[in-house]
Length: 128
Image (cartoon, rainbow, N blue to C red; front, side, top):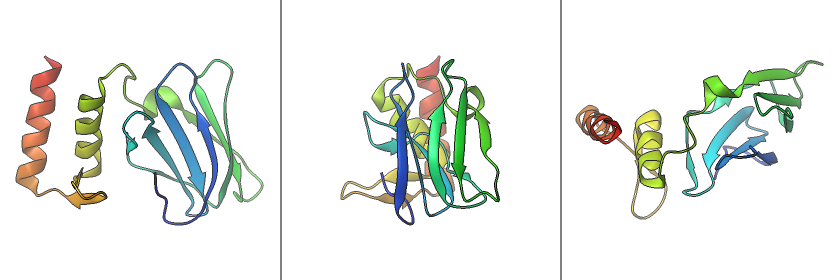
């Protein structure tokens, strides 16, 4: 679950398979703990991410850090896919969102436009 710099904070979202991390790269990343794959592109913040909290109703992510004396609030329902996707479909969805696939040796490998479209068609076919 890499970042471009040090990971400073992590939190699980209760009742879901999601893990959220934040770090010195000014990014918040969302992961599927079952597969270790990002479930959406990272969210860019104004500075180092040093704190992450989920509100008790599990609707809002509160991020804090070096944001010029501010906190940032994120609506989790708009950020995350449905948590009940099986791991293989979640992996496929993450690869589509990242325009990359997990290389057998580890790490992401960029998708060609044709490969991205093929993955999108496969995902849509499995959703019907």
